[in-house]
Length: 594
Image 1 (spheres, rainbow, N blue to C red):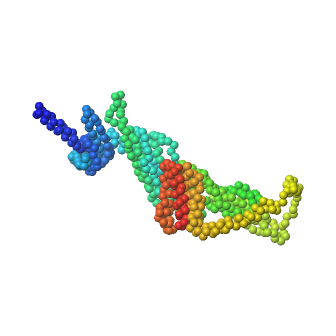
Image 2: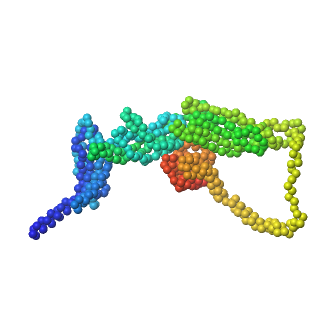
Image 3: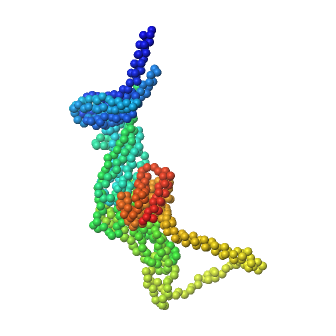
């Protein structure tokens, strides 16, 4: 009996040791393959380990993996664990290839697999392992960037469309964007996609289905060779497996696949210098131009609106309209800029208007000189100019100026104005100034002298004197506060340029377009430069040359990047408010340093 107990104890102890032993092995799906075939290698362990390190796979190309699978089971009171790392390989050349040792750390001890030899022979007519779930998407899923024009002119509109091509052999259940393009050398605008729809097409001569996943409108801001950034998406691919259901149908396996488009290069041509008009401000496209007045006949003191308007297709947001000039006798106010355009794959189309308010001060005829607008037409590759006619404003009633000798005339920019005194004519209502509703007062009304109002008005100036002294001291102190005045002026300037962006808070696309335009308009007004053709790198150089510190310059560039990035990704109200506050602080800081 004692001997049986000893033998049983030894058996149980040996079994427990064997079950506790760590196993780490490497297995290949095939030891002999053709050079055009693929194989799978599995690294299996029966205990969970850390710091798994695969071999270098010299002589092979990794076409799939690593895929990880973990299994836990409990059968008859016994727990089993397995963990597998799988790779899919394709040989680079013929011959005997050796897959080296993989390593893993279990409970502080390093374990290694044994090397595995694979014999690579000639290409076979029908390669095997072609339906592997991790390999199939590699050959049946493609993301392509299509550029409308590879060699545009500077500031000419081009489009880039990213299409996902899916082979008929597989299906997809979902996909999502991983990387958004930034287009650093372009003025870009994201174009809306109303749902993802698959259509029939071809890819490299084979039938494929495709869907447009992203599209953008680009205006190149630099000449030479520019790169259109790639994007990446994650696709859930449904791949047929070798298994079938009880009804005979194919069982599909879903795998996640990252697909990246290749980068595209375009060669941007500079605008020709020959025939370039002196008043050209960077307009590229096809446009119509006119100047219109709301009325041409009015009285002095009344106002009219003169509209300078350009409409058509092109870079409407990247150039300035010519300024309207008027005679000295007409008072003109800063124009109100109105933008009414939309962007499609055909470019940006609409109108750009600047409305001037004009008020005449005296009688006469005043000519408003016509304007000339020039643009470059990329279709005909020539510059074109449009001129408008003069507009004559006839002010019928108002002051006629200083009288001269009888019968003489006074020639000025307003035309010929008569200085003869005109006789007074009666219109028949010469008694209209007689008051019909008299406000009569009672004779018994108390006297104002020594009334409560009398004493109040007498004492009030004495009470106001201390307030005037205090107010004067505060005003003097504020006038001497040079730093404070500069800060207040900078804050007022920031509110001026950011007013449009503040109105669009909550509307993401309009907000960030207005915010970016405000930053550019500030630089244009402050430094007297055209920012339409400048990249962020050039803006950074100019600010550095002007003595702006690196922190402020970096913040300015960061806001421009946020405006570009926010066109493609959702942004909350809180984020937009933060970006608005950052822009206001940056403009205030810049104004104190420039």
